[in-house]
Length: 175
Image 1 (cartoon, helix red, strand yellow):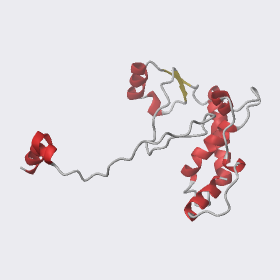
Image 2 (image 1 turned 180 degrees about the vertical axis):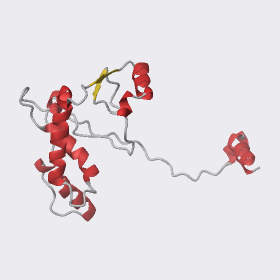
Image 3 (image 1 turned 90 degrees about the horizontal axis):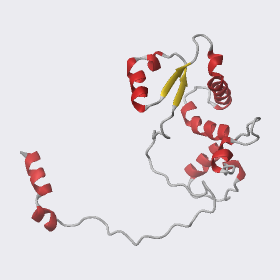
Image 4 (image 1 turned 45 degrees about the vertical axis):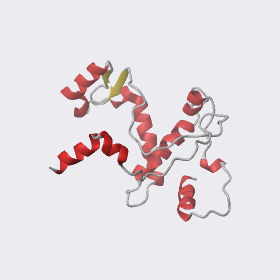
């Protein structure tokens, strides 16, 4: 019965018009400064895991997760081609192998002894990888996509006095 009453009140025009407004009134909108370069200003929210678009081709090892009926049908529906590397020949997907090797080396250097903080380091590892110059192009992936290098924490001046110790510690970890 409670559900019925809630539904009725929610859909009743008079109930909605007579309801007291307990929300704060919104202030006037203030324009934001216009950035002069990409990534100078970013918008943040707590949404994650959003895709960056559908790939036309996916190269993978022969992991059972990718050769099962679900994934093969999903890739077919999405119009993406799933290419498998040769069995027991990981060099057929050398790009992924090289990246994984670099990532493992990075994590070995920076992960704490208990190995419980490695997930926190993945975004920083990605930034470092994308900011380093390629020997073949003499440019970083970041520069190719955004036409400039990113601003990195170690290149910025930090104020000496900070009111939030948590913010100071977080920025120190980034540097």
